Image (cartoon, helix red, strand yellow):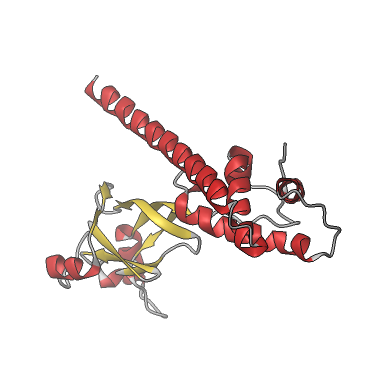
Length: 229
């Protein structure tokens, strides 16, 4: 069983049927192989352990996405004026501009643009305070500025000696192991092992994602039943 970064590295060595001493080429490259495995897992895993939630003041038409952002699940606009929650609709940026143009109002749609998220209609420009705002401007912004919430899938946090574990390693040690072994095959020129490890990794990720999807579906069904009652 392996529960931290050091134990994972030892397990990888065991599976590779090697016993290099510290400082040898294969041993030194294992941290890099784990790093590459984490990059692959970030692309493939869509599970509760990679879900994130972020909130921010909504007072500009463009806002920056979180630095660990990978894929968006839902965007909510928490309005200040009438205290509503609006689940924003998704567009690509061209469709967003065609649909809303430069309208100003309560944001109800969004599009991802590079490392930013664009909202439409655009928030009231009066919500962006100048360097020396009047008391009237301050009061207006305080009464009308809402916020937005992003629920998204983030990157798998990198294991290090200082941060030796994370939620993915705790919940899915098999995925961590198979992902790292799959990354090791090209380095070790072990072409015959690559299909085996890749197949094991793909199957483990598929199982994890499917279980998460079923869990989300069950929660939605329970919510609907409660609303009906």
